[in-house]
Length: 463
Image (cartoon, one colour):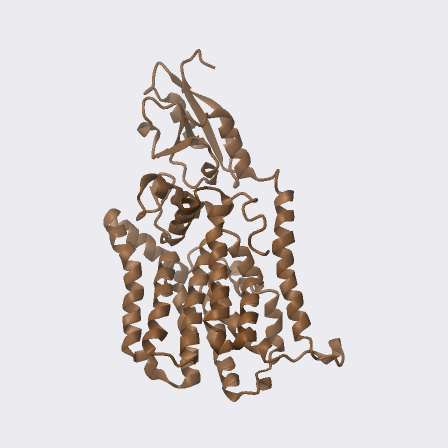
């Protein structure tokens, strides 16, 4: 009810095209090692999200917004299932269900879980690693099980975005070890083998990727992604100072309950100490990442899963102190407030998104631009895109799209091609297809108001 209604009714937006278009190219070319956006390799992010989108298209047999976004919804579901199964022995039947409901009904998870962006997959993989590690640790399972199971999710997390989520994973690990005072687990051989497994999963892609591209350029792009954040390249103080408030918004409405938490209300002393340890394991990485000069609020979203665990512990134990001045003598507000928060999430997903889809039906610029192209280029033709950079409009174009880096690379038998506006004079001056000539037939604007020009190459007397 939250994640599936109108999942495919809104056109792709924002960064979704960078996740979908490389997946389409992978299916077309069979090259699953080097993601491509337009006519160039895409170095900035690892390819896991592109792989899962390509897998969804291949498995379901349809390429549309719904099949593209389905992996995000399924990754959210996987975490919810892990809460109610794997974490059940540690949180109890009620606590594990509460944790799953909190996870599925906070603003951040709903927003990212309905888009095919990296965050839904990324925070879900981090969350699964935390759930398995913490559950097995609290159940006193074998060290090999405690470390090796999460290592698989951590390795996949490296393929989703990179190592930042390790800050949140080890924040919980160190907090739990401080709670138990069992630091030997950190130096167990299973931990070192888990690191090998984690890095090995990432290396299985990274090594052939480096050999398939200009390795120096790839390494420069990767390092720039992280050093640029730490150095604060393009640092904006007003944006930076809002990181923590914006990050807290992702956990609405549930974040409103944390100020009411009273660990002293836990009847079990061990639960009190664990709750305090987990609170530090959530807060320190959350604040630390948001204070990095080049950070943005979404970088701290991996903190959502451990925050769900902690809040589930608090709610299940009724360890909330409700303000008497506002609520009178009625102190048992936990259940009705939680019910209201869950109902709010249901309303956003089951009502809010379908209504939004209806409102935006005639305002989706990407689909409008594609419709203009489709009206002029027959679906049986090949449309050449000259150095188009990032253009989500191609997802909706019916003709086969071929990318080239320059007008010089256009074949002599080309019929239709697109260039960015600044390349119009070069296109009009080209003589490579004489006696035919290139004629401008329409200018289209994408979602960011950038302009592209569609040319038709035909004899002078042809309409």
